[in-house]
View 1 (cartoon, rainbow over the protein chains, first blue to last red):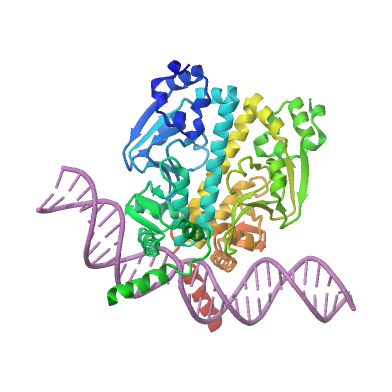
View 2: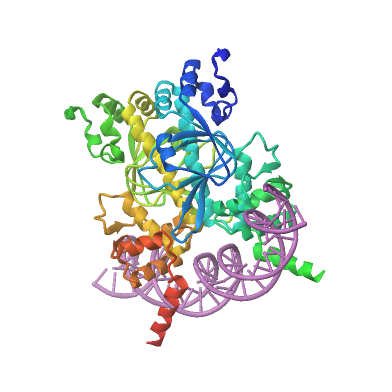
Length: 255
Length: 255
DNA sequence: CGGCAAGTTGAGCCAGGTCAACTCCGGTGG
DNA sequence: CCACCGGAGTTGACCTGGCTCAACTTGCCG
């Protein structure tokens, strides 16, 4: 049975991650899906063009990070959603509505699936259907969560939420207290609806309060999970940006 | 054939609206779904309890408006999503993740569907599956759109976007320029991540600029669609809240 | 090593949050 | 039928979180 599994699939995100969508498939299904699929890579900043999406509306993120961006008329940019390893992106209605541009935020590898084969597998295999349905529903609720973060949370609270979101989204890699942030400060700001300067200041506050430690621009250690959770859930920090930085700055300039 | 259609179904939102999900069903399918479904009504402000959702995780909005609310620890409330007539709500993963509370925003009638029958229809009927899948994907993209509205738009821009969102969501009722707003000011504020006072001020600006006319708290007329569209798409209004109201207020107090 | 892009720090300002007073309206009871 | 009440909405005045702009530092790539 395993000897029938195509080689490529053994390392594929859809096979290993993504709640094992491909692992629910029978070998013949897997072979036929694999035969009609293609991987493509993108460099950071590259946009996935509309005509490519029209031809291959369904794909899986193999590695790297992809963003769905919206642009306002005057140039303000928003990252409306992130997709990471194992996420299944289904753009089959992108022609009906203006969903935005897909842009690679890092070196990105995607596996484009044949819509026809995908559909026929979803039809015939109830377990596969259930997995893919759950994943789609999960994306929907993730977007809803993100909306509510943006709606009422303050900058510090949004950042704290985001750290937990990252930690939940790659449970393998992060050993609970180590969280990988898959984006640059600028991207992060665009996702959280704030300015890069503000992101930077918020990180500083969390570091000063010994709640996190920023080892690298893309890797942080959570030192005090309950405190971070408190902030993320909106137990309104008495230390806001103003209260947090300005006294510190004064102290620093005084010392 | 039509004599086999259960009476209840003829007026059901899932049958008439919702891209005609039920209309794709064969009479026997419809009969079996109908037999195992139940309608329930809620009053404004009522929460749909978790145990009800656990037993009936899939339902359709027949009439009225339902909201998905998130609550922060210090009491700040957000309406993360609206559901209106024809929307299919699938909460089958609500146990895995904290999705929030479902609260009726008006007199609400929902039709609870048997998950088992629903699943079997989705399995056997490709057209029904495609319709329901599209609808779920649409909900997802709607949430993503909403995120990007909240992330970078100013208050006035968010309100303008919201008016278009309402107009698109019940294309039947609104005769292009008449838009029904299905929520109170307070709910609207919670959905758009702003204060009721600010919502009120923004309406006033749009009225003063002769872009809309508010006939009733829940019904507005769009007088200048291009201008409203401009604002919604972020062609940064030179008239912000401050610039809009304060001069007016001065004029008023001077006159 | 030089040049550019990303990130950080600082200072000032403004959009919108906050609080308080007032109006409007639907329901209730006398 | 009107007096009263309470909750929703509106208006005004003030205040602040975070945006803006500018200067600086850091890190990456050739």
